[in-house]
Length: 449
Picture 1 (cartoon, rainbow, N blue to C red):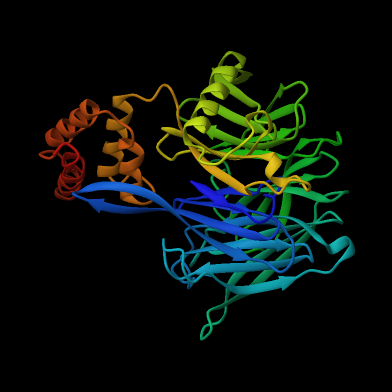
Picture 2 (picture 1 turned 45 degrees about the vertical axis):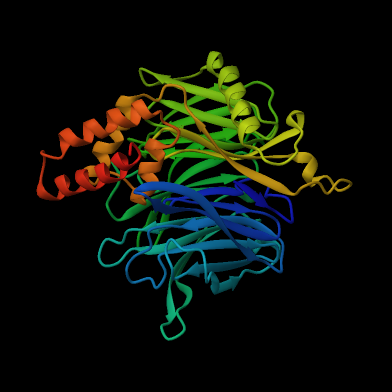
């Protein structure tokens, strides 16, 4: 899908993927929400993307997403924008997953100088008792972090504001990077959440935050000062990967007070802008501005650079671009903006554009594009595994999106084999599972008619 942008994308952390199956692309003037829409013609799920834009009168510095908000929150999903005047602005829509009616529902401004906010990250923090609470972490130029708990401050107007705030001194330099680790709980008290705080001087610490925002304390120090700030990260269960210039740091979080830290040298690279973890394949994919793709593999708990996989993957991704890009572009000057592995593991999805489009002297087409690259080891057994997860409720997001993720681009023979597999499953499992199997069979089987 082509997304028409009026301003350049944000240089770092400008691309996000929402669990509501949405792409969020931030630029210096707008935040774009791109969502798949599904129509069923003859029972066949067909996908196309629709796009909405949130305008900002101030330059946008950062964007983060609030997903799976609690029932007490009047909106199912929300976006948080950091403006250049140190204002935090909250946008939300009551329709889910529709894109209409996005509106500003709250805002708050921090002071300038040392209190000027330069980084944000959001999480929905499960409360020890009662409803979960959306929290936005705000890192300042002076090294402090403010944790802002969000809630309804005016029920009649559905206005969102701060219901609790915790501020603590975290760094000796500006807080340049923040990342919540919501699943790092195996060895942690149930009333604590974990926040990674990265400083401009390269220092990285893990902080434990009380879920009622009553206190925060250092759990462990990951990096000492080396003047290489973190520019990208990836999070999985019990795993955090941080990327700096020339270095990848992997952190095993099973013991949060004494994490296992490994370092993998990358050599000379341009600025790294994205890192995604593929848990099923034990891989991490890292991308730079100039579309260099770095692959890390894990074997026997040890991470290593899988250099033999990098060139084939990059060339295959370029072929995907050539097949799908609908606007004129310069392949030699292609910019990578962000990546993610689709929730079922079939696609390495990425956002890329021709950097000439953002040259001051050449306005260009002002287009960035979302690409879907199917990873080469996807098999029919993988499709069956995903269908099993869908039928038993072990999937996340929209049902038709998951079916599209399995069926898109498959041959008639493969779809026929999947239909036979579903037919066999229709007599197994609980009544609810059998009903789900039959419903999926009606969608898949119609493709063969």
